[in-house]
Length: 170
Image 1 (spheres, rainbow, N blue to C red):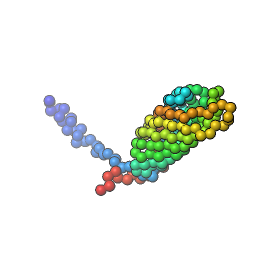
Image 2: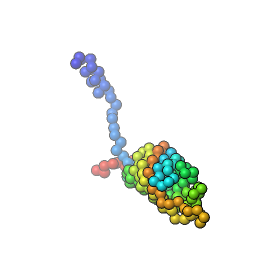
Image 3: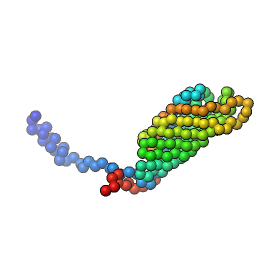
Image 4: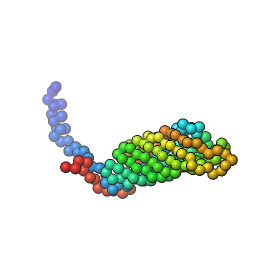
């Protein structure tokens, strides 16, 4: 190896700016997350495409917030859900109310929405369980219990800025 590459390497090392890792956790931050929602149901409704929005209040390792979803399913009906959600680092849980609009075969149905998920900054992967509780009419059957794999992609937007707390409390 000639002297020139060594001098160039030494110059780069000596003049490089200081590298620094920020190990702080968010404290009292507010985030709005909006993006597309995709699902594949084990029930006859098939795949769905829609939109999800969530507003989260983040503090250290956990976050609490609200969510809303609207999704059009393959069998020509719409599924809406709203509720509360909580995260502990990468694991989350949604609890809320869901409503499925009527189609030719089923009456409009309202029920319970339960969805555990694995969250990352730009989306989540989870399992959704819809438990029907009430049907709007008696002439057609209500929708049955739904189990679906759900993928969401999200654009995070920080609305409120808090302070960082050290990751390691010494």
